[in-house]
Amino acid sequence: MNILILGGGGREHALAWAVLQNPKCDKLIVAPGNAGIAQIADCADIDVLNAGVVVEFAAENAIDFVIIGPEAPLAAGVADALRDAGVLCFGPSAAAAQLEASKAFTKEICDACGAPTAAWARFTDAAAAKAYVVAQGAPIVVKADGLAAGKGVVVAMTEAEALDAVDDMFGGAFGAAGAEVVIEAFMAGEEASFFVLSDGVNVLPIGTAQDHKQVGEGDTGPNTGGMGAYSPAPILSDAIAADALTRIVQPTVDEMGRRGTPFQGVLYAGLMIENGEPRLVEYNVRFGDPECQVLMMRLGAQALDLMLACAEGRLDQMTVNWADDHALTVVMAAQGYPAGYEKGSVIKGLDGCGEDSSHMVFHAGTAERDGAIVAAGGRVLNVTARGAHLAEARDRAYGMVDRIDWPEGFCRRDIGWRAL
Ligand code: GLY
Image 1 (cartoon, rainbow, N blue to C red):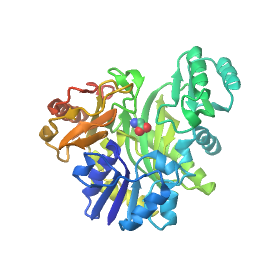
Image 2: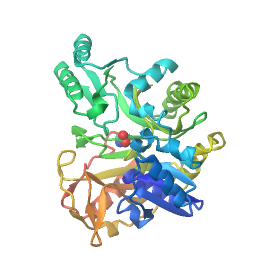
Image 3: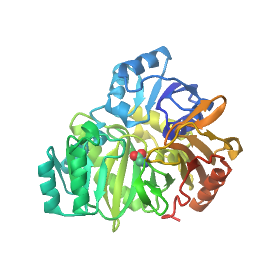
Image 4: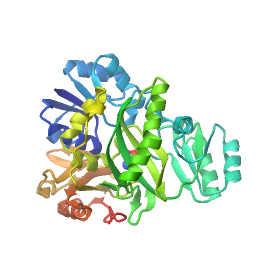
């Protein structure tokens, strides 16, 4: 089968790596891809946010199955256009992608289906939002309603911080995403991610992970897209995962079906766990990045079978075959990230990393220049390893990090510290 993956980060490199291990894949194209992906698949520089362009490209290249990596093409209706054109596709419709594209929409769904989450209110003007902050007090959470590339959430520990966040959001700091603001009660506990496939009716959990959002060791400093992740998440025990599936994810999928907008794809539930009770923080409608890298490392070739079954509405016939293993990924970022950083520095030593089924360097933001791999983004490499236990996965990942010669890059040295 001919497969097209949309996206060009570490998540898509990991998806491509897993898909290529499955003999069902005859040909793989990734659009736009990156320098690492180009070493294992064809890359095509097309506008993945333009549904018409993607449909035409799929027809021209006899694509049988499209896997959509990032949220933006999903919110732009690319999955809808592909399905309308008769192309099998993994990823939700634009209507179902509202579960990530609108925080208020998700909260309404939670209220409608009784899924446990924080108390909330929505606002379209700053004065009313500020009055609510003052009435509720801090700590409190202020969120831009729309897609803000992971940056539109402020967990305010003081009232002043919350009031500033309201001003920033209504002042345009997140563009149109901040035209509406959701304010939520602060939830204490430990956060973990739960990944569940849904074909619109059936649900199938495919793994758990935890990431490190802050740039500094000990989880300090500004937030990033994620500086590392590991799977499984020890805090998400089988019992808590089963509870989250029964009380949060399945009711959400049922509610989306009742509304005539079934959710088909991967639902990435951010959960806050306190005293053994999970509550929903947020949904994403795609794999996490870098969480996908550790999930793919553990799932391997079966990831394609699972995504196909999801797209074909037969998840009830599938099981996930887990090895009793662990995976960990360390993000190497350009010096300065998440603030300003330089592009174009040369990365050496990648050949010495000894890639195999337990060791992979997934490329997140790289390009090829005169035969060399150069940094082309903030998060640049995802150095990923698998082991019989988390400490082994960690040691293998940092062993690879130490072989990479890139003075203009940095990483956290404590990925997995909470679980270890
Ligand atoms: N690592 C967080 C995310 O993918 O949203």
